[in-house]
Image (cartoon, rainbow, N blue to C red; front, side, top):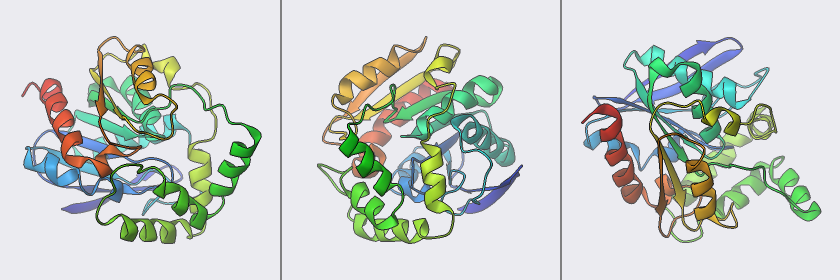
Length: 266
């Protein structure tokens, strides 16, 4: 493994590189870090891929205090990592909030992107009742409450190291500026990624945990995302929550490896 940082206007983006082969760039969701993919990375490396998990701006070891945390800017960060690694074009994998970012990256620099994977993508903006809005606001201001919320996103299986990972996650979120970054990553912004989806020309894979608690009907959400693209497939990961790469890494890797073969001609 090697680590790297790429300078961007306003700060730096931290990432790791594992293995050799066609490049896969992994971007995590709100409040997480690149360690979210700790169980998936070795499976992709063993299948012959170079894998670069990224700390999204404001998270993990990436800097805070950015003027914008919009998906388009996060997507530009991912493209900067592809250029810095100098191993593109890459398949971009975005989880949760970062699922929007990979769409902007693919349409802004199609020559650097050979395929997209969206894990737990939000097609529509959640309609929250007043109590839910208050709860979400509290969670996004308290590292401790975020840790409690994070635990609920694994309704079936939980990684063996989940408790230790969550403690590290909460500790990172206690650093100055981290919770503010998490709030900004999911703040409403225009254009919504769905307005860009029709311009994507690369193959797309939509992955969704069949028990994802963030959606009333995860299967319907996955199908809605798939219909936005010209060439896309939707796959459900059974007995999985919001982070299938963490709670069902082997099953997620199987879907990804098959898709990567399509993108790379392997």
